[in-house]
Every structure is written in structure tokens, then in C-alpha cells.
Image 1 (cartoon, rainbow, N blue to C red):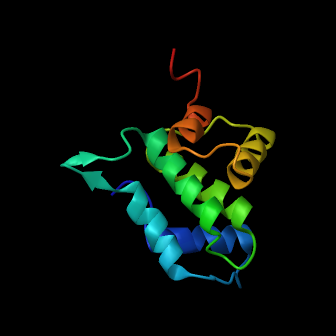
Image 2 (tube, rainbow, N blue to C red; image 1 turned 180 degrees about the vertical axis):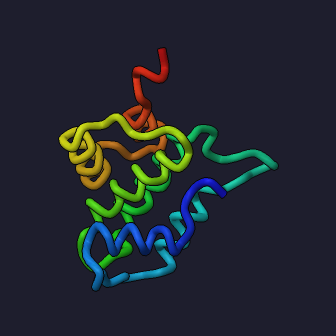
Length: 125
């Protein structure tokens, strides 16, 4: 799999939050990864790299699997995921902050809406 493993997520958490990062619920991390890989009727539930990354971001932001540092962790994990899929994010730090905040407060509630913000306009031309 080109995406992330549970160990990858834990390493991102250690590098983002610190070496003594506390995981509140390991099942939530596992569920976020499972959601990204979901299939129904033999087809991917999330059709593009951006949709899969959006599902990951949504899961990590809304379930808060860590004791602290969930917002930066969620974004960095999403950016790493996109990079591993060959679709590195072009969002600035401010745009990434706004995106995570919009997911957290419910302004962006669907994977489609989040994915739209993750698409690199230069790549879509």
C-alpha cells in the first residue's frame, strides 16, 4: 500500500506532537486508516487521492485520537499521505490551518467539500 500504516501514523504523531505523544484511542487511528481504504461493491468508496486524504483528515480531526495535538497531527498525516500517493499538497500553512479549522468547527462536513480544498489547481489544468 502506498498510503500509511498504523506505525506510520504513530511516527507522524511522534514527530508532530513530540516523542512522548499520548494516544487517547488506538482504535480511532486504525479506523481512520480503514476508512481511507474502504471498498463497497468492489469499488473504492473514495475515488481519488484527494478524496482518500479528505476522509483521513476528517476522521483524524473529528475523532481526536490523541490526547493533545490533534489538529497539527491530522494535517501533517494528511500531507504525508498525499505525498506518498504522488500528490503533494500545495496548500500554504495558513490554508492548511484554515482547512483543519473548517473541518473542526463543522464548516466543511463532507469528504467532497474537503477534497475540493485539497486539489492542487495547477495539477487540474
